[in-house]
Length: 505
Ligand code: KIV
Ligand code: ZN
Image (cartoon, rainbow, N blue to C red; front, side):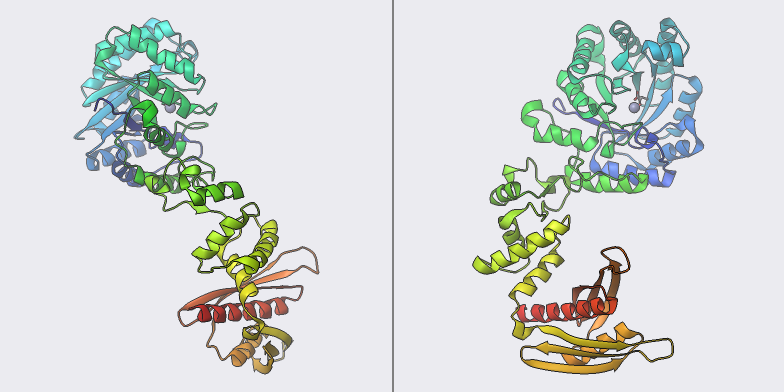
């Protein structure tokens, strides 16, 4: 326990204060269950006096959650504290988190009180809260901008009144890491009764420093960190739990601390919170963003494929992400392409690999990312010999509002030319039936989509199809200014890819 940092999660209280979000009691309960699985030490789950929904959420979570401490927020007001006490009644491990503003701007402009008055309110509230919960934490709101002498006086007074955890929030995200560390150090050195309490840090991200400030606080002696999943919270948010936890884990050589967090649950927790709050995670977000373990540029991919440690300081599995990702783009290089082709079952080298690489670069220049299905299409085009591929020689369709749609299609395979005609529900359906007659495949069209890839009357239409034969499904693509021709080409392309797959199998 000596080297343990306590993780106080406030996703369900401060996190839910993020603009435009609201969680109902059932949604909060779902997240609370996952936070328990994650192994947080304390979860702050609401502000019961603020609304009946929050009261209910605190009650419901308190009944069900037994491992972590369940905490409720109050202001330094007796009615808030009594309501929180009611919500926490019967909870196995409970905490009331009470407090008020301690900076002059908060005392004078928001609370309209004097320093002496707020000192008295704080001590009285702590004493009252002790009657309603297992333990009391006191928050000195806006401590980051408070006059340090007064802050020390306040901390001493609330410890004297019985607070066991002292929260030093940088409410407005104003401090710099070194300053914040000095403040924590000063409290440790100058508050006479500080050994009777744990110092907690609670940093906001207005200048993007919430995590840095929290970690500086830990270095200076804080033993509890308040944070939220995905860093959600008021304005620019709170310190992100996953970043704090992984910084402490990956750099345990530097900090010398551990947490009780089961890091393999981080990704799942992040997804759940993002989904229920409706706040998406940016791809470049540390630890749990889509790109956090994705390698793309040639130099990086080359190093990563030789030894993942060249560009990874932690394993994706540690945070619950299945595996690292090599994203193929125009910058990925030959090594990355060869590696992905091998994963897809193609062992190419020499001239063939160069041909595929040339095609790959052309596609990659047009697209942000080259997917496996693009690669399969390129490779099959390049390695399939013409004698094994159907080539569209000719097609003709007839359709109209008083005509039965019919199609004639001529395909060439090697030296053999075959022609068939068929009727259908429309010209595309008729053409596909004619192709089936030639290939003798019992193919089923499972998906068809058409999109314009250029603008105007002469737009190039691109058709994507998915065709299934037995338990095999393949995708095909065709482009033309004539959408029937694009459709026919896409189907022929799918048939060829299916035949190539069969041959490989
Ligand atoms: O940021 C803050 O100061 C808070 C307190 C209520 C703890 O969220
Ligand atoms: Zn806050």
